[in-house]
Length: 185
Image (cartoon, rainbow, N blue to C red; front, side, top):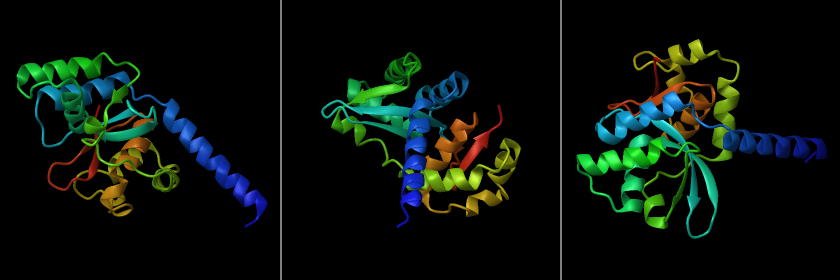
């Protein structure tokens, strides 16, 4: 392989990793996702972009997941009940975490779906980068959104959500199809 190609690939991977770790979801998008999924149970949960730190190993990873999975992980981590009071406590924990960084043990981490790969994130970024936010909103609308065909495999959901969050949008998971859609703010 050409040395310049290798250097370019490494630079792209480092840039993707750095930008994913540096970007924090907007307060309004994150708070709406938490409030809409933690206390009120919904079949269309919003996505959150978080940093998960393994309490045992110290390993960190950036993850975009639906807020209800984060809620479940926090319930497990803090041994809180799933009644209204427990859901409010978990919401308070999440809302007071301004860095969106959570230190979790293995049991709590297991409640979070596997993260997308850097290659999947890069694929989504390449496909979505030339599009405006308006084009993304149109292309990912629940009915007739043609961008859903670009990445039909479920494993891309987290990567799609991360790219949308980085663009300042508020993605959620549709209740019947499981597709990633965008809330109008």
